[in-house]
Image (cartoon, rainbow, N blue to C red):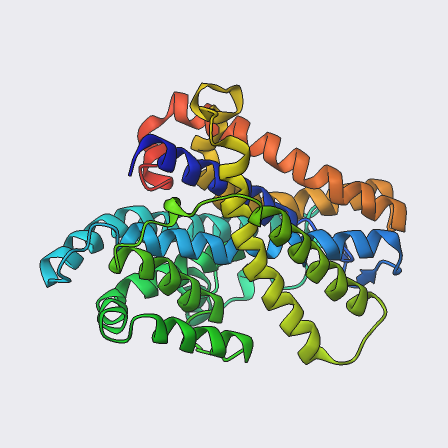
Length: 356
């Protein structure tokens, strides 16, 4: 992988983490005390659904595709020794950060629920009432920082990677098509999300079959793909907004929009930055904090949203303002904390970010 390709993955990954934060910034239903408050439908709800439940939905699938591609990039013959080496590295980059941030989330919520002033903001579940089995479930399977589901699923996929490699070697694109059909059917795999296996395997397909995804030529495809992507997201958002009852059609539109969105972003990057060295730009320095933003932005953004609602009230206007302010504040705060930790406690920072 050359420098341009490496920079492309870093840049797209940072863009995707911004989308992840936007997904979690939606606030059409808020819980400040014991009750939920639902914001009335309007332009605000339409905009939030268009962005968070439309445009930003490409984030996790494309992250899985990139992860699958990188994991299998140096797997040659699929021998046990090759996977063992990968397991050792992924234990450091996935398992350790997952456990540390999961435990941190549990302890943090326990501490904040113990403060009388903040307790009304977190009344859904009290950590102090958990049984031992609930604590273990929260740490290993259903972490309080719910964005960790991505690492959980990725860890499972890494464990079954020899099987995925065998399937790709013997069934090639048929296995990807099979997972694609199950994704459109919204099949429940139980042990991981249906997005995980499809897009991880799709990314792996390129590496296993020695197809370089960076070699796709860009002429005007990005224009047509962008138009299709936006149109699909718009149609799906309109149907949801008017309360259309055919959930199957809505699901198909969302799935199709994700596929078009992934292709759009991948090809659009080459069109926009083919002759640009992003490593020489100021923003490039922020890309190093992508993983930290991912693990740190929740519960941070939840606290920010609830705090802003407490002061601004629960109106449609306040909901829209919070939708814009909460991710901005969260990103700014995350980068400051990451930079501070990296400077004063580099060993700790490397440990909690998997040495990224």
